[in-house]
Image (cartoon, rainbow, N blue to C red):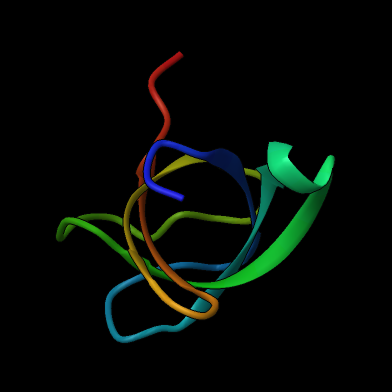
Length: 68
């Protein structure tokens, strides 16, 4: 999961459990995961491209904004 990319579908921020849709190539689909900020900072609004920095099975990820 680390390094996978996706988009925020439910605001991710400090003290919030948000949601992201990640592209999962092994399953040829996109899937929803609970998301937390990987680093302190501004909240990530819906639609923000993100990258997974840490993964905690089964469905929790820590994300950072993706660099274009």
